[in-house]
Length: 291
Image 1 (cartoon, rainbow, N blue to C red):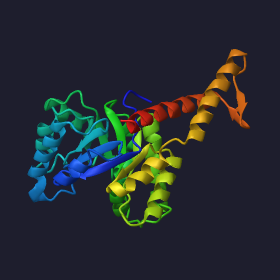
Image 2 (cartoon, rainbow, N blue to C red):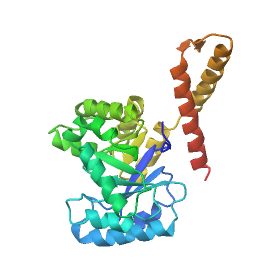
Image 3 (spheres, rainbow, N blue to C red):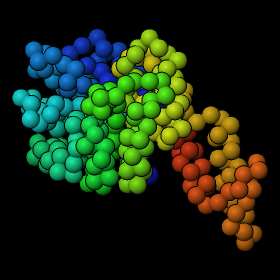
């Protein structure tokens, strides 16, 4: 865990070209809002999208939601202009697409710093086989990285694979990125589910991602929010158990024992650390939802 730790149960992409969507996101029950200038925006709408995003960020109506801007690739006609326009805005992170190496991370940070955004954390998109294979290199490249976000739709296409409910084609890639993120204490968020009408499959993907170790899921539609938030919110039974674990192990340690049994489970120090993280997450979520 690092100082960039926070709830990221749901991260909603909001197209910068649509002012109605930008406005609606100000009131949605979402942990993170990604104001999107990237690939989904038509070429003829790129400049207006940038202007819209700058305006809405400056209005400052997103409350305690984490506010992120996804920029275009640097090798596109818009990437560097995006950075120049947003580097001095009050946002929580800049999301860089198509990151495949340590060099890509350092280039992104350098461009952001040169534009005056030296205090802004970054997020990186993992969307290609090469990025997955370089996940450790990417995760270790800078402590400015707040989160690694999978672009699973892109990855499926580049793998020449098929989308299934069990996500068999993605399991290895998801695990590799999770391992890299956790090794360097980065947050890691699952990719989108682009079938907007299959709620059962989306809920399955959320719970699968949670069980694998993701912090949350990126989304493309507000209707998906309740499922993602529910899957990644610690249940009260988990919260109560976490408190019991911390208390029981502390009492065991005070009496000279290094372990303890709680609810028939053998508990050690690492279980208490995980319990403390869960309680911190629970407290942060409670604060967000009470806003």
